[in-house]
Image 1: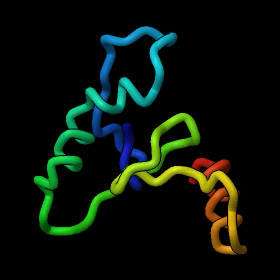
Image 2: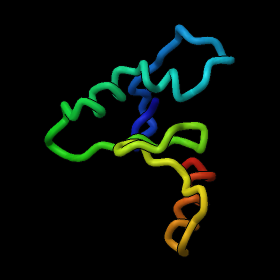
Image 3: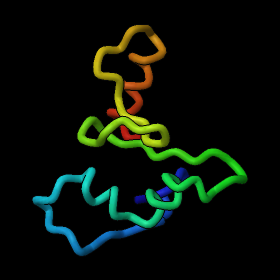
Image 4: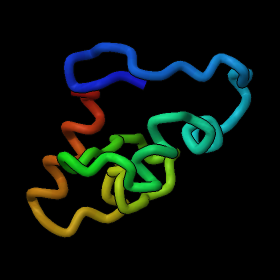
Length: 81
């Protein structure tokens, strides 16, 4: 996991490449901190691809984009900005 400055913030090396990304994420330290709402100074979100479940603090692509804003978000998500 890395932040907006491309600095690595978390590594979970115990899983093989065959394990689902969402499972690895659920076991990560930052995910647990954010899910438990332990960070109060500013909202923090995770961005994931369509392999992750859509959650309150985990932004994933729109399955059926309804407007131009959602289409733009999906395009940017594919670019991994």
